[in-house]
Length: 140
Image (cartoon, rainbow, N blue to C red; front, side, top):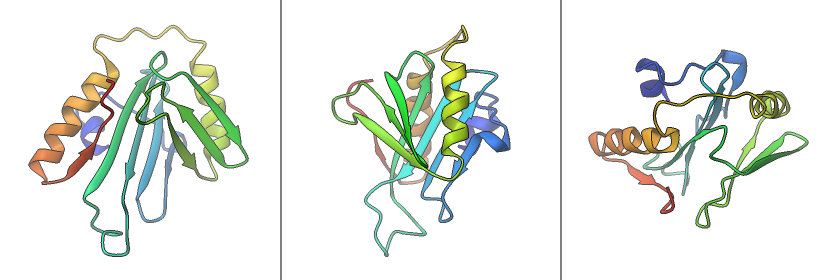
């Protein structure tokens, strides 16, 4: 996530970010650029809780996910990808994230590059440099 912020691709406000206490899951939206970024440590066990190796990284523009729904503090984002059909964000700020995301879907954002492709490219490079396993959709 920090890499995407450093290169100016992803600029969320603090109030538009949800992180778990352990840092195992992150979801953020960038209202200005119309981007949703989700990062999750998968296959987490007690051994890998603080030094995880498996990461799911997905970037979305406002046209690259099918829908989102909210149930209490659980935000479900439907990806439209058969191998990863949805991602879940469970956080106290999920309702606010859902409202902003819903409003963003009604704006006409222009994207110079494919957001999912950009995120995948950079995530793969970061994973290779840090010897991490990147869990990616086969349907990008």
